[in-house]
Length: 274
Image (cartoon, one colour):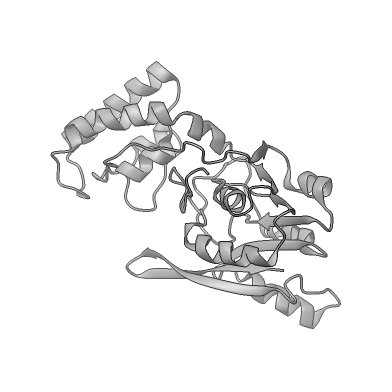
């Protein structure tokens, strides 16, 4: 049995680590022989959790954001962090860096990118940018202030998605391919009215896109994730009472968990399943 990960092995904006316990409990409602399709695969944490819970189930992970590339680059990422630790270890933790240290960081990062042709800037952001801030390329990274939040140990994703089938496809096509009475869909689209700065920037979502996703819930077994900031549940209730359109969440079970952005801002994550 592979290690059970309760969080993504690499930093990932919007991962479902706060829902892992509730998600595993809710899986008891569903079959261990079902096919589970993670339509918006993200970090793969939901797919991993299903495979750990039900080893014999078929689990499909739609890696639209190419998280696999980050996983395959962990050894190079660890090398970069090791070099950065060599001179950041003596600096005050979580403090803003002085200009001289900031410039040294940038030189090391640029040299690493030149040598290996790739830097995982999202992972690097978790060690050097202010909490919950992410950069996806050198230009964005170099425009930020740096804080010494360097991770003190190496990353490890050994066995993380073992046995999970990886695909890269439009979620609608994937849904059409697997729709059946024996399929459970994991539906975790980027949240409406929520920062998605570390996601694929070529895939900007509008309100219509969020509403289109709801069509996959009709008649399906599903887990659906959202937050109170999106107000999508309230919108569906309004539509149901004002139009002839049904509410896709009718009859589902809701679980919530609290989240914080900083000391003055908080929100509620929502999981619905049926």
